[in-house]
Image (tube, rainbow, N blue to C red; front, top):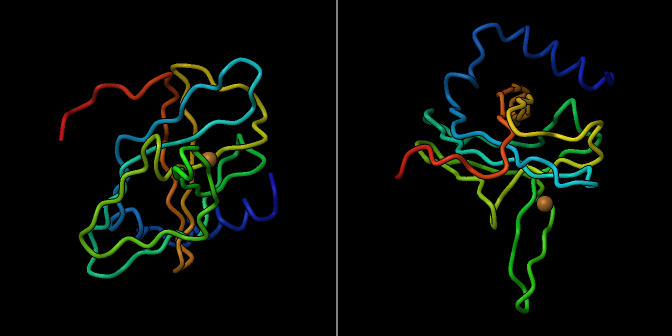
Length: 148
Ligand SMILES: [Cu+2]
């Protein structure tokens, strides 16, 4: 465990009634199972800001990954490319969807392959120093949850 990870946990414990967990709702969280031989994958979720203020996600982290970042997939000259996103601001009352082909959480340098049925924790670090960790279920495809 890194010093940074410990620091984040300490912050999480200090804010016992975590403002973030009340204000930011993470749902439909899943991570794609790693393809054979690949030690990287992507996580997806729906993140809703229930507060009256903008909430900015400044970084993401996961124990299972050596490097975790926010990414965006874009089509440029008919080619799909990914680029890092420095931070993600969610306006009051807004919902942002991290979906295949769009914004996602990039997990690189995985310590182990991720298989269907597993669950991993991914933490969102916020601008106000709060940290919100949620369980992401590992799946080959997005489960047909609900249509909306
Ligand atoms: Cu990516």
